[in-house]
Image (cartoon, rainbow, N blue to C red; front, side, top):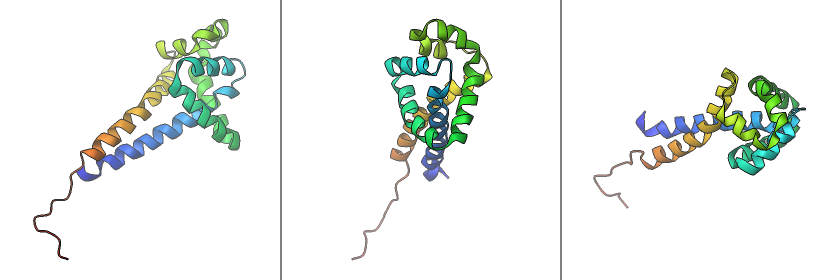
Length: 139
């Protein structure tokens, strides 16, 4: 099992990345604050900006994924829409400094889980057990 731990970490990275891309990619579709949060993310959060750029292309092709992501964002960020509308320049600060509900906490956890699992995958792959050969190969 230990030699394949990096595959488990890789699978978790892929799951987290797909979730982030689908959810954050639906951000521009939010009617009230989507553009404000996207502008703030482009200015302050390169990881969120990457998720938005990748996800908006995927969500544009699959409307069901866009609807899923938009609903998740609506549930998570709904309590903060009024504050984000008041001052769009601090949208990312509001999103990452406060926690409005459990959905919001889940989105923030998944946001940081993808880079964590990527680094963990790389570390586990480098540290995987290598095969030991006692005798040389026959030629």
